[in-house]
Length: 122
Ligand SMILES: [Zn+2]
Image 1 (cartoon, rainbow, N blue to C red):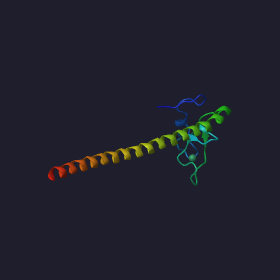
Image 2 (image 1 turned 30 degrees about the vertical axis):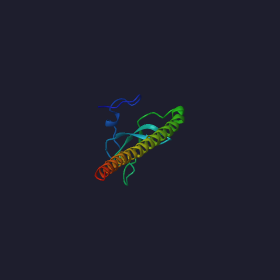
Image 3 (image 1 turned 90 degrees about the horizontal axis):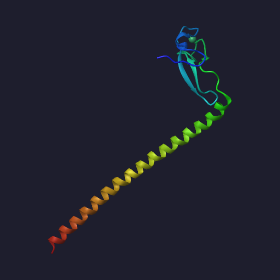
Image 4 (image 1 turned 90 degrees about the vertical axis):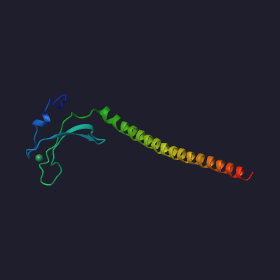
């Protein structure tokens, strides 16, 4: 499968090698400064003795995109928090349901034992 973009063409990353001769993998930046920007990631990037070759794969994000992206990140974070809270509340409800079930079983048992006791003593 090949990845294309509007200016680099297909298989560009496969043809691009850094000064060490290593092949790039397309990775995605999730920083606020470079939202969802793809770049060529080389296996040795940032390591000691590596060539330091770096290249963006996508053209720069437009001003509007940079303005909107942090808001989307905030919304995703808020939704994740909400989903976690719902999951936590579902756990609480499940625990109460289990407790309620045991309470009903206990009450029925007490009533049956009481009935037996009353029968024996009548
Ligand atoms: Zn290199």
